[in-house]
Image 1 (cartoon, one colour):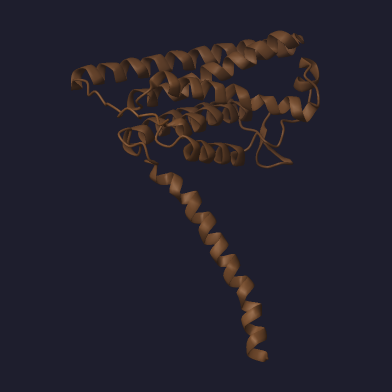
Image 2 (cartoon, one colour):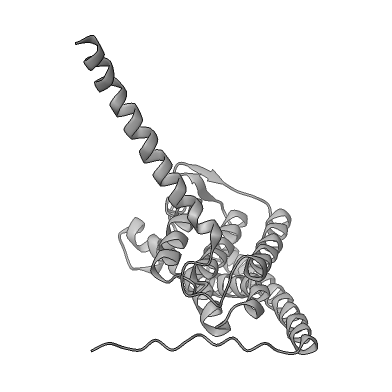
Length: 239
């Protein structure tokens, strides 16, 4: 039995309506940004007073608000806005499951009292998960949502103790003002990327940048194959 795939229908809004919704989206993103800042300050107060459970809940809330603030600017330019925002939020929260694996415990206190964040809190994780999402669900903008969600999480972690951003044993920590600028840049990047590079009318891989990792892998394998063949060719010439 075969299922018939319905064609993707794109309904264009009048230009004035589209611009009004874009402005509303930017205002909503600013609101979530201010909410994230307020919840982050509350999290710091809970941390200083030793209220671990309240700290954990506020930390998760701050990550959710930050992810929404960074993802909402791109939402007007994707077909399914709710799905896009949901993926960004889930990505921003799900990455902390690696604390359970690293601490070997599901209890709150062991997970929150680790000396540093796990090695999976890195740029490599963002790249790998984004690439896998683009291959598994092409043309759905899931890759961009995951990039924004995970990226917002890592940026906030830089300002709250640091994270092994590039190397497992090297913690990168940044003060809050520069991180806020980076988050603004992440939101601007998501908006620009969704508006300029993504094509919602195509179900195939419409993201041109996702082909770069494939080209890198293929090129690396080709270079490795050439290097492996050189000793064989040299041995044949000597023989």
